[in-house]
Length: 213
Image 1 (tube, one colour):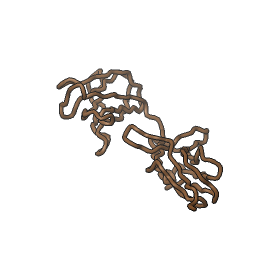
Image 2 (cartoon, helix red, strand yellow):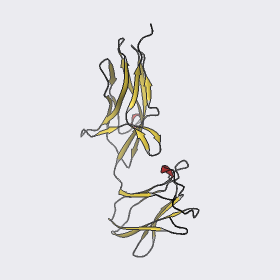
Image 3 (cartoon, rainbow, N blue to C red):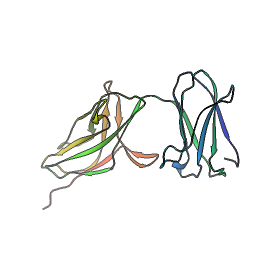
């Protein structure tokens, strides 16, 4: 990005469609302190404006819903007029649809043979996602069982739930598995652990140590 420059991207928006525009720069280690502005090309009226996603996430994100179809312009600049070759970024503009995100706070878990653990799962339902989810584990070996858990569309289980894993007395294992949610139409959604803002893993590690001699 050049000094004092506003980058501009035009596209045709549909009426009553909810859009989201997201800048990725700080998440990749670049210093751009991005600001997004959306204007109607026909009269230069502002539809929306935003900078940081949150206090901890400094890349800009904005949502907007045009009342009528027409060409709009997405404008991006640096909040403090930073510039230079390292002020690189990418931007994604897409219609917003109901979606859900499942995350786990850890990427490694351990069970003693003959015992159980419960893995807490955070469920973020966005944009009116209101489907029941059945949550279980894929890739577990014989001797380790996951008891399926159900996240209802409303109530406490809609936001968080625990998946219980049980190891038989003779189980011994070191390896990965995945936590998977299934919707009524059999769509599968993988839970993940966030290493960094844009770096996630959906293979989590499980250890069932051999009994001490």
